[in-house]
Structures are given as C-alpha cells and as structure tokens.
Length: 368
Image (tube, rainbow, N blue to C red; front, side, top):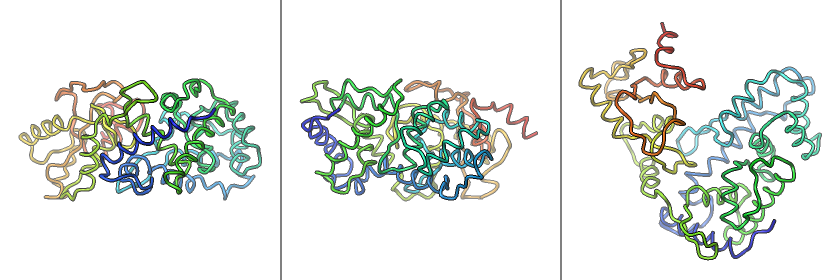
C-alpha cells in the first residue's frame, strides 16, 4: 500500500496554509506550531504518563494471576494529563472500552498475555492474536501497542482513519471491521510512509507527528472538492478554534476552563479532537436568573456555595449540568432553562461518575 508522493505534497501544502491561518507563520516544525501543540501534542504526555502508570518494568512473574497487572493496565488507560495548563483525559481509547476492561474479573490467562507482551517474551503478532482471542477491541489493542513503543506503533480510530486514508488516495484500504495483525501493520506502514515524507519538511518529525498530521487532515480540515489533484481544505470553524486558544492564553481574573473542558455540548468546535461546545449564552442566563433568587448561587443538590466558602473569589461561580447526555444532543440542539441544573464541582463529578449518568434525585438520596 503506497501513497503517491504528489498527493502528500498537495495535502501538506493545504495543511501548511491551514496552520498558517492560526499560527501567523509557516510551520517550522510540529513542536513549534501553536495549533498543533494545543490540539495534538498532548498525546506525548499521555504516552509518558501511561508508561509510568503501567510500571511494567517492575512486574514479576509472581504478579500473574493476582490482578496487579490488570490494575496497572487500567491505570494506564485511565490516564489524565496536564497539557498547556489543561487537564485532559486520555481520549485515545473510547470510554466504553476502558470501562469494559475495568469490569473484567481477574484472569491468569489475560495477565500472562499482558506480561509476555510488555516484557517482550512473545512475538508482537502472536500477542495481537492473543488479545483478539481475549475479545479486546482493535482500538484497545492498538493502544496497548502504542504505550509499549510509540516509535513503532500508533493508536487507531478505525472509522476516522478510513476517511483519512481516502483523503491521501488510499480508497481501498479499510481498518473498520478488519481487526488483524496484517491490517494493523499495514496501518502502521502507511503512517511510516507519511513520517518519511514529513522528514523532507521537518527532519525531527516523529511517527506520532505523522499520526497527528493525518488526524488534522481528516478532522480539523474539511474537504470541499472531491478531485484529489485539485482539492482544497478549509478550517470549518476557525473562529471557534481561535477564540478557544486565545481564551486559554489570555490572563483572566477568574478561570472556568475546567467547567468548559469537562462537559462540552452543542455546536462543533475543534478543541483537541472534534468535540461539542456548550451554549455559553444559555449557561450565563441560567446563572443570572438564579443570582436574582439567591446571590450565593448554592448547589442545587448539596447546597454548597462557592461565595460562602471563598468570598469574592467564589462570587458568581457555579457549574452547569445538562440533564441529557451529550450522545442525545445534535448540532445546535435547542436547550431550555429546565434542562440545566447548577451544581458544585463535587456533585458535578459524581453525576458523571457512572454510565449512564445517575439522576439528580439519586445523588440527593445518596447525600441524605
């Protein structure tokens, strides 16, 4: 599976124009581009943190069957990192796949496979096939390979990369519903070809940079012409990206970024990978209406008030919880006041602690 050099040249030219729109300069490297750093380079931190949480260099054969190895892997997939002063959850594995693995009972067989894989006591192909036999998903397996060695392996999102590969002229290669060692190694070989091409533009480009380059092509740039030889791409919501990144860089007296980052909704923006943005106007109106009733803005579940506790620092601060999960919303969903509940940070986290979310009444009963 070989990518035509001319197509990569065209895509990189479009990518460079796209980056220059925000960075205000030509892309010098993937490490110095502000947009790339803000949206993609957190994956380096995920890798390092996951490796530390995994701690496989300390594993001993006596650990097999005790549950320790599975717990360490759970810790490595539930990694949270601080990137550019924002706390980011590991989004390289779907949360449902993380939960499914977390709920597995201790298995000596699975821990043996994990031990042999991370200790390089088994061939990679055999490990991949063993993971499939254990009913691990393609995405989950790819993540395990990634945190074993980021210089050789990459994470995968099958449906997304199927679209990305079409953009670079590989219409016939599909990863969806094709979990196999042969498919995965072809996937990696394609990214290696892209990395080798990127070396002609940035000699320090890594395999992970190539992965990020492809991800940006397919998710932050929108194809508006189908002709591969002459297609152009646009940033579908440059104003939103620019606004978000500028907000993060600006000095503010009071910052509520964590509120926005943790529970987004509504229209599409590009913060990290594609996410959804809350209607900030609605949130402000809900807060303003509540302020008229009680200036202390107490949590509607436990009654905690940031103003009572922190004085002027906490004045006007509260988090907004949507009663409906993000999966039930569509672009520009019309949300009513009654769909929002104002809660403290602790209650907010507890509402989102399980899937499906627990209700307001259930959390109140727990507190009582």
